[in-house]
Length: 467
Image 1 (tube, rainbow, N blue to C red):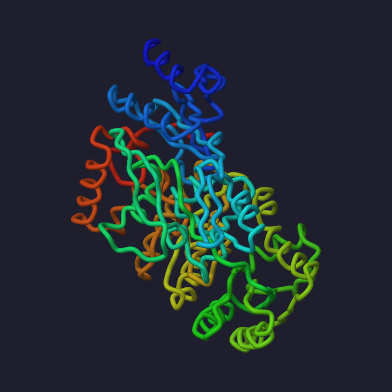
Image 2 (cartoon, rainbow, N blue to C red):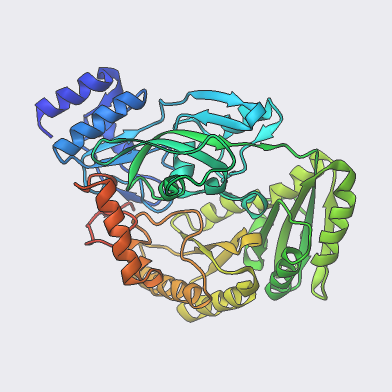
């Protein structure tokens, strides 16, 4: 990047909102995927108009732009593999409007998920998406990946909970799409198109979020099963009855054994799997709802069913689930974490298949995740510094994706594609559809400057892997 271009960018955002020294830029060159690449500069726009000017200038000079929230993504989507500039929205933190009468909130992309929940909660509402990293992840990142979390089983993903967007195309055109109402069918649905596009089509600078009233009450159940099959069958039974849980989390037997050293929970020895089930709604109907869900959860393989009613009891049960992350980080800090999805009825086949692949490739696999919508976080535990383990893991991952597609599933539920899954996309999407997607990309971003090399399977780009 020439000194003249750098000076122009500095004039747009101000000296305090631009980094250029490599030592300062490196922290913005990686995300939670272990991948890294050095940007030429990092910019911190303060508002929509500054962002417009940056995009227009970068498009004119064909400088790559990588939009970034908090960098919590796991697929490398915010790694600037084409160099250029990183556009960090961490300083665009304004909650522009809270409109409880219309159940709407308007925010800038740098606002964290937790800040949205706190602001909405003051008026008796919440925004349904709740990723594990909600305390630090940004709304812009949630929208870029369509990240949802446990509540999606009942309340949906960001696509179902975002009414409209303000954005900038790759050639610097300003876009407003969507509505301020809960209904609207005028024109094509560009809002849903941009959500989940990982910053490859447009840069989001403002989002109109649809809020949901907080439930009066909530109950949490923990069910322990003898085998994974028993738990998977219970998931299908729970999802087939009238009461939709607001969370239905699955943890396999390997994960349960890991939790023992990190949790105070009393877990039966030899348990094959565990379900965390949460039911919410009107206080007057919660007892009946819990009864219906509990009945569906019971089968011959059920070892224990525990209900929690007080906040302390609920927290104790969820602490068991939350103990997984430190356990996995301790055992395999460089694990491969994928978020595959299959139809709920195919969960037993998926889990059996994953067990077989684990044995076949000699790679331990730990599964947990959002069972209510068939979304499992499949963790391949390995030491990537061991060439044989790395080779086995790559072969195993390839077979995992083949299994998922065979079961009519998808290779990513909420973590996105980024770099990690880009080369597998053509297995899921047919050539004609992929060609249409490339044409859409061309219309939004004719010079290809937005998040170059991500999401769609273009020519591979060499990047570094963190050790």
